[in-house]
Length: 372
Image 1 (cartoon, rainbow, N blue to C red):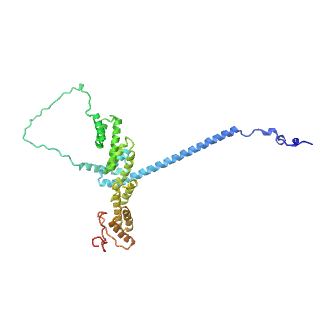
Image 2: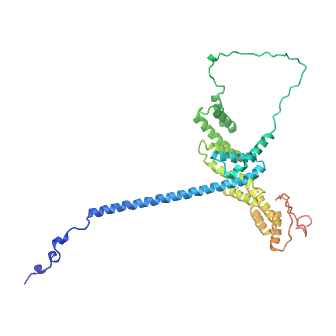
Image 3: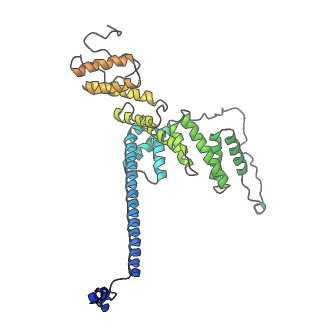
């Protein structure tokens, strides 16, 4: 009888040794394939990330361009009103800014002639300086006046400058130290006009400090915002204006609103609200906005839209409680409800929010007003 070991099947009984040929890829091959796959995955991630960044940058650039075009369109919309009012300073500031940016927008080019004309008109109406007049006397004069001549040996003349640039620079330093930024800017501008290469680093630094100090003073002391914006634009040529960029943005919105006041109530209200979004108590923005709400409401009353007028009066009352305005609002609300008399407002009259409201042409005047 055969033993268990002899009857136990072995590998040779099942498959021959030559059938075990190594036909499959080895560990080295699989390792190379795995490393290549890892590198390929990283490459795909990098390409996708770069595409995402590029797409985000493109979207940001398109948004910035759209905002800039919207801002330019708004400036062009205001421009005709400013020209009609002969606001030379504001009109000049807009064109100077456009020129510094490289080109005047197409929407502003048709107004160049009018802008130039109001500038020339402002020069023509400037008060002339008084001139001294000589009265004729009986004193006799010789028929020929002697002339003095001096011979200067040209070959020995040394080239000297009639300007004391070092003295001007020291004056600018002294003026800046004393807080007289206007004179400091004037002296530094004179140095640049005489010799642009004189102490360039020192002159530029002093000019940057003088421009920013002067602009800051104008922004925060109810000074000329147009001048402050212009000085800020100049200062940017010499350094980072930092917080003044924010001041300039708010001031530009405020100046834009001025062109719409009592002309385009909706635009004026929009601009003033943008100012308030940046600075809630900026100059007299709140009072101007209050008056524009009332003017807008009065315009709706004249146009026969009392319900829309109530909305404007409510907005004004939310800013400032005024008894006379509350009475006007209630009267117009009655008209909106169809239960009140239609008040007649003179479209040519100037609305003063501090004055009592006009009474209706018919009916009994409210209590507290003449005839009530």
